[in-house]
Image 1 (cartoon, one colour):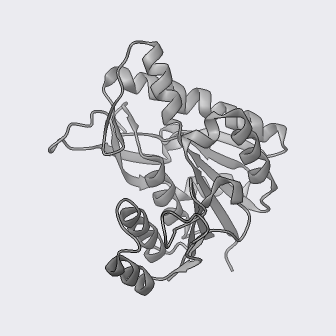
Image 2 (cartoon, helix red, strand yellow):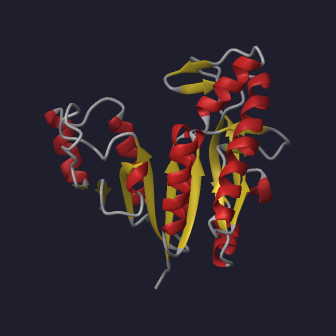
Length: 257
């Protein structure tokens, strides 16, 4: 029987504010067993870039990453944000190890091809070295993964944190019974966007199709849930969408087969 592994993905807003970061670290430290954390840091990157006179350009929520912006996101994601999290977890008794995809070659990506938009140094994940990550986790180390990967040719690539969490969960499902938790600004997937208490507790593929047809689930939530079901199809036991304040609880929406 496989051991359980919980993978938590948190957005930049949570890890960039002292109060929310402190609560996250305490809640994450309290989760028993094997775990892994994936973080963002976009607001900090935008702020640092502005202080250096570098303009931030976003297209459909994705950061266009030229050579100068790549320097900024490397400093912020791989340095400032990642090491603050690692230090905070060490202070709470968690043997955390911060890394990017380039470290130990754990995530290899390819530069996104130019189509309608040139995103610059943005990476699409090709493969995750799950065996290497699994060996770290089995030794009691808790990986803290920054949203940076590499192409194997000496170039770092800015890579979406949701994607890193999903691809890492899929690959580690070979070794562990994986639960993937996406922390979100809402309490879960809502029946009514205007009612924060209208959380849908469980979603199956059949229910998902029904809610999309009825217009209950729409917009940007559709691709998020399609990615969640893709993880389920690849062997991840469950995907949970919940708020950062509810990690380690039973709150939120559970995506199951």
